[in-house]
Image (cartoon, rainbow, N blue to C red; front, side, top):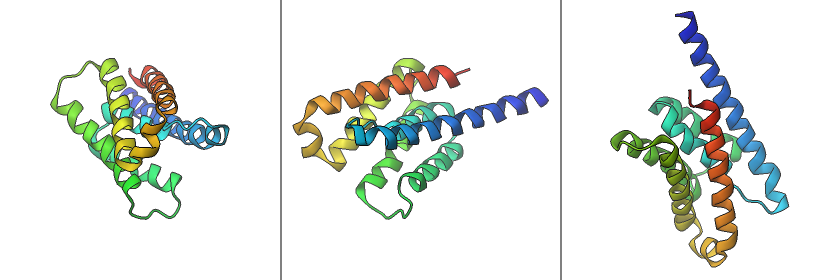
Length: 148
């Protein structure tokens, strides 16, 4: 009983630390020209590791961290929908965890940009590909650290 409680506590603590790291990376690297979607990536990985209400709490937390005065806009809607759709898909279909996370990150970010800024994102494919690579690497490292 104590062991299970401790493991659950460590899972939540590590998720919070990963989430804070994702926010810091996203905000810190943006002025340098690297526009990684690390928070969205963390939420996509969390869709594989957490239950619905836990994921929903992280999504709400992310909205308030990235946008102190959240208002309804298309980007925020997609920020909420992408991890929720990934959650439903990974529960509905049997996916290999490592491949499923990588494919979900790539697909989620492509869909996010296709809906929120299609002309800007796809007119310069190079930065989008770099963003995808950085996010997939970050997501797989998060999964590696939190999987067990």
